[in-house]
Length: 133
Image (cartoon, rainbow, N blue to C red; front, side):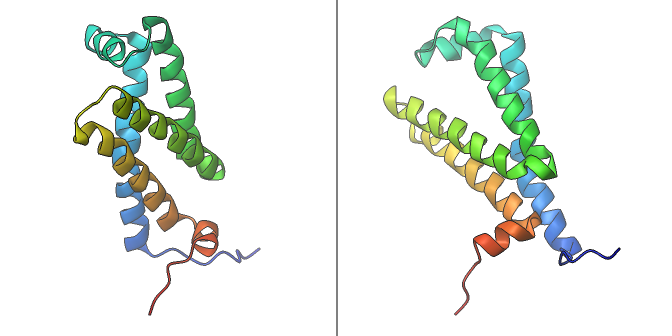
């Protein structure tokens, strides 16, 4: 059987891997750290106004969403869940009056995740086409 899917170029696939891979790696490490709760994670979470008891649950949600994003069949669902997670991070930093970098950083990560997914998913490209002149 032949696939009816258009082929993604090698350059586009590598760009997608880089755009997706860097934030994915960071989110996996962040989620894993929340499971082990080192002092720096507990301290940061408390400063943001969340109880220590919420840390492991937040880590599990982050890891599940990130793993879903990494699996091609569930990548869009993972991207949607991560968008919600990252939106919560933006809202949290706005609420506590955090510095601009802490507010913008999750939004940039979201853009990288969606950009990488768009580059590697033809269905998403059809749904959200870039318009030329």
